[in-house]
Amino acid sequence: MKQDLDRLMAERNLDALLVLGNSGGNPVMNYLTNGAHLERALVVKRRGGPLTLIHGGMERDTAAATGLHLVDRDARYNMMAYLHAHEGNRLAAQVDYLSDIVRDEALRGRLGVYGMMDAGEALAMLNLLQDRVDGAEIVGEYGDSLFALARETKDDAEIALMAQAGRITAQVVGDTQEFVRGHAVRGDRIVKTDGEPLTIGDVKAFIRSRIYALGMEEDHGTIFAQGRDAGVPHNSGTPDMPMRLGQAIVFDIFPRIGGGYFHDMTRTWSFGYATDEVQATWDQVKEIFDITMTAAQAGFPCRDLQAMTLDYFEAKGHPTARTHPGGHDGYVHSLGHGVGLDVHEGPNLSIAAGNRTLLQPGHVVSIEPGLYYPERGYGVRVEDTIAFLNDGTRLNLTDFPYDLVVPMK
Image (cartoon, rainbow, N blue to C red; front, top):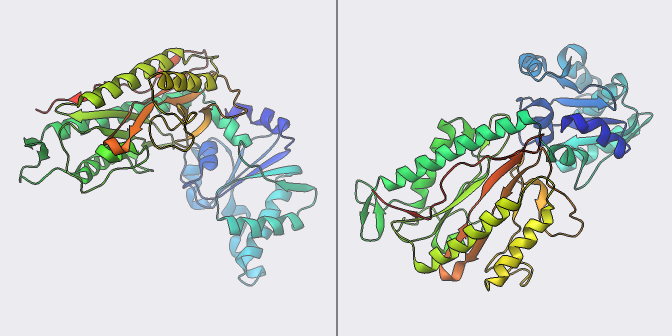
């Protein structure tokens, strides 16, 4: 949580922070500014001091809504003057500007740098900046950074926003089901009023329209995959494929609400009827889903949830990522992951070496067992996202029926 930043800075031996980049596609900036849309902003913080947002004058109202300490860049730092002084050299002007920020904000000691920008530009700029600043050592982190750890736990206000995202996502899923059910059937095909087949692309266009109509964003492409495509976990679906009765469809949807928070849920549907093999596979996936959902309580080891799932599927005769590493059939992924400003973030529900994480208040995670048999023409996955409030109470943020068979009208 944000309230943990000073503690995490001390643990990482960091004296100050500098966060760079536009807000778009920049989870750390979004996290600190509560999703505000900002261009060329900076956020700085000394350990023990406030978060300070350095923003453009045209965005002063947006900046004020963040609740951070503010510095108007245009009023205090004349960017045109920096460019004039360096005869239009944008790199030199930016380094000059940043070195003035480091001086004025008293960013001393170990200065952690975060945010998003082009890797080559960052390398050139930070190398020159290090040469310009006195008393500050610019450092970076790889992997589980300070902000990755801070974002693993959400406060109740963040969870409330994510619960809203879950409610809207479930509405989109329900609307999509009704959209498909409302079509006619000719033979084994679902058809439109003109007699042409309803396609995967048609359904995905409807999904996209509902996501945006209800105030969310499709930051990543929704998965709506039928038949063999459903047997490849991240196959998003073939747009021109006709919708057919009796085919397993993996519908994995992960839209983002204002403020940048994602929801993640999956249902497997078979319109009209399901084959015996798909039904039996779905029954097993749903059984281990129920078992792990019951076990997933505050204090439970994350890795043990994956171990339970591996044990279950292996006992049923399925290959897994443990028995057949790199294989494409059976259970080929981990049980779940954290959800937040990224659709995949910490904590991980895997048996990876070193994963000693216990579920705890503030965690928001997906539970998503699945079985995949592409050469047999199907895949099955069921997924909900759950959250743990600060008092340890567990909430299921996904509220939608699990039924495999969806009858046509």
